[in-house]
Amino acid sequence: MNGIPLAREHAVCLCHTCGYVCPAEATVCPRCEAAIHARKPNSIARTWAFLLAGLIFYIPANLLPVMYTTMFGSSSQNTIMSGVIEFFESGSWDIALLIFIASVAVPCLKFAVLGTLLVTVQRRSRWAMRERARLYRFIELIGYWSMLDVLVVALVAALVQFRELSTIEPRIGILFFGLVVVMTMFAAMSFDPRLIWDAEVEDV
Amino acid sequence: MKDRSDLTICEHCDSLYETPLLQKGEAAYCMRCDAILGRGHRLSIEQLLALSVAAAVLFVFANIFPVISISLQGLSNQVTLWQSVEALAQGRITLIALVAGLAIILAPLLQIALLFWLLLHAHWGVKAPGFKLCMRTLEHLRPWSMLEVCLLGILVAIIKLGGMLDVHPGLGLWAMAMLMVLIILIAGKDIRRLWDELGEPSA
Figure 1 (tube, each protein chain N blue to C red):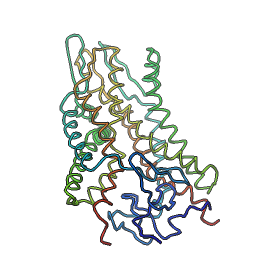
Figure 2: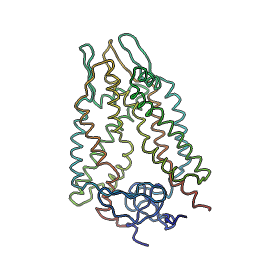
Figure 3: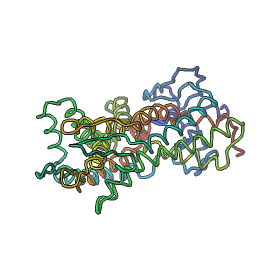
Figure 4: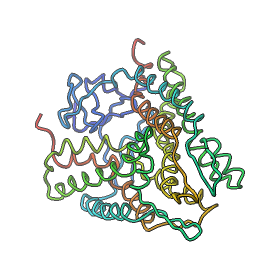
């Protein structure tokens, strides 16, 4: 359309594992022996599945406590949001913002963006293709930062172990939160950004 | 049509290009979707090999020395990376300990070991035994290696506990910070150059 040749027009396709230009009829990369596909198999269905699984896990991840703290006899449970609010109220709004971005904004953004990409690809939309491609790369880049909260809970729980005086324990919410991150990472990996551009060529 | 090895396909939109020749510090972008097609090599094989040895040493330091230590009313406690992964391994939530262990210990360890193995043989001008398997494993490990996130996690934990206890960063934290920089330098997609530099497939 705009003069840049496409791989399929020249009967070649890309090996995602090593970047080799393979003949289009190959099923295994001649260079690295990884399986190759012109498009990731069942990309849309798989991405939807992982995305919905992530969304479902996101509910208990936010409702259930992630941490149980005992301090000098008094105990409290923290969810992800209450941890953010605690930081904010104690005056360290910067840390509160950081955790808010990593634990709330990033996962929500991922849900919204992947959902939008899936719907527009299914409707073969030609709207803002360059921007959508950029959006996908952005989501791929920021996705794993959500693991922040899981690692913070791990460190804090391992450190604060003073028997009667004070202890911190991880709680079930952190499992669901970790699964949200893993599911959304799988969702981003199974989405094929080339589908965005297919709207431009196929059945036109 | 030219030889296939002189071609590059954009992995984000399937556009086909002749492989651009890039100097150190240069990068080529896809004209259709703006994704990066390739970057010029910043480091030589020998430099990468040296950095992977340094990374191995730092990995050992980051794992045997505590990353944070705390004290409270005369009691003190310290934690290594392994202990913090262990703290998650409790009953029903053990699964998440496996994910955390993969992200901050196992994936970086495998990356360093595989890179050292591949680069050492590349330095001798040969393909390492198991070359294809090692290269494919590196590709699959890359998204799961999360040392940068772990470093930020340690800093947040220090600030979080700083309000109620005495917190001291440990030696492991400094090793971890340097290791993170090295991993970014050596474990990127740049390693794919070994495919070209060590010869074409027989097929």
